Image 1 (cartoon, helix red, strand yellow):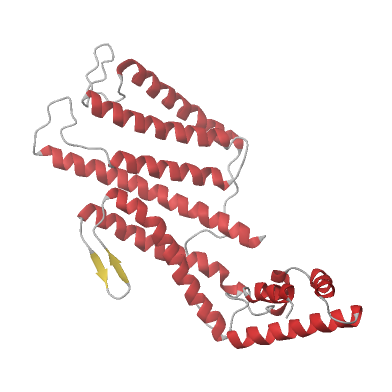
Image 2 (cartoon, rainbow, N blue to C red):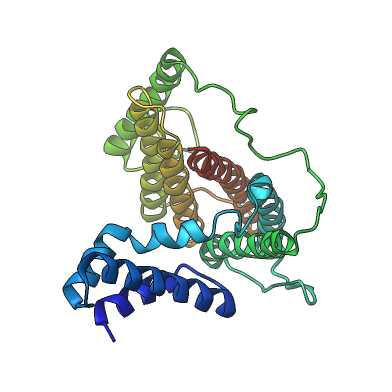
Length: 315
């Protein structure tokens, strides 16, 4: 009948759920707008209806006024959303690391299927797993909220709560951390510029013996120096801001560099003599150590993301 009115009602409908209830609300809003336009301007016209709609307010605000008290997830369960997601994702992360190390599938039908993953596959899989875990927990809490029942959920003692978060470290501690990191990064750069590697088989720098072949040593060295530089830069930025986003970006960069390091070929990279039977053990040990570091960084990343999310919810 009136295109502007129909478009306005359609936009409001995007924010409403439940077909029967939605149609009832839209019918009520249509009647109010038409009655007000007719009362204020006489015969209905596109212009008079447009004026009423402009005064009525944004579609989202109107929809929210009808949805007060009908939360998708009850406010009382919002803390559970991040707590349960963290618990579920921790299990996912543990099984992912196990799948990478042991090269096995893990099946808990019908709840979980963890395929055999490579290192790069694992880093690509974990963000998807986190979003899936968040969606599953949100869906469960949605059904609990809509049931209108008083459901008492268990409260695991872990994760990050606003009232448990420690105050950010003072700048002096960041300075104390920055000084040695800056020294290590500078020293690593000096070694690389002079010798094209930072890994040596002996500590005699007058006649150094590289641990790795020139090509492998250069690749590994550049990645490790980049990790040092990322950590140093994060500490430097934290002198001027206490934002958790600094730690979050630093964690993401570190994980990307660890993944890149794990992806490097490790077939006969040593410039010194290493017995052939020891090579698989050394490779496994290095991979395990890097994956352990990646796990610690991932945990810190999750904590930072949870803290940022909870702060936004608290606003």
